[in-house]
Figure (cartoon, rainbow, N blue to C red):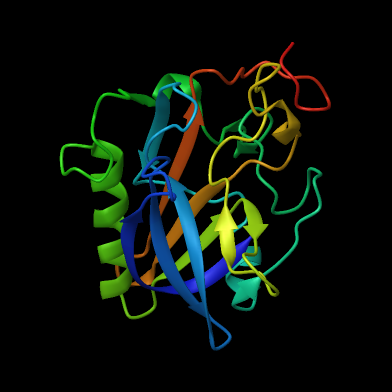
Length: 208
């Protein structure tokens, strides 16, 4: 997980001009990190997403107490790690598949009519404008060379079928974005999954 002060963002594609992500820049501990948020699937499946504007984190006090920067999270319940299938807040699921909206893969990534891109851009702008705005990015750290550069896999990381990202399956390791906006006393969360991912998984995160 990466906690940081948001400063900007842009759409970025890979070297082949595919697999678009919205790259959010976070400042933490004097370093700049990148948070790569999927805004289109790279495997042909369609993206499911929801943006919860009335979000209540499972443990807001623990999040607020964390220092800025990267923190490794144990893949187990009772901590800050996320699990779309197993996590509850006040007795209700943290996120439900039925609340998610389908983003058709035919929409150009980065275009203003890409609703997921719109939501991420608008949320980032709110966080930048809030003098105390903080983004918590859950996922997997990546490094292009040397020290970690940031976080990617900001999406559900379990339930992948065989032959399609099945090596990424596991429990209590899902990704997401939590945004704290103290100026309005609000939290907003972004959850992303893919249609190919099952929400019925075993103890290793594989589809049942």
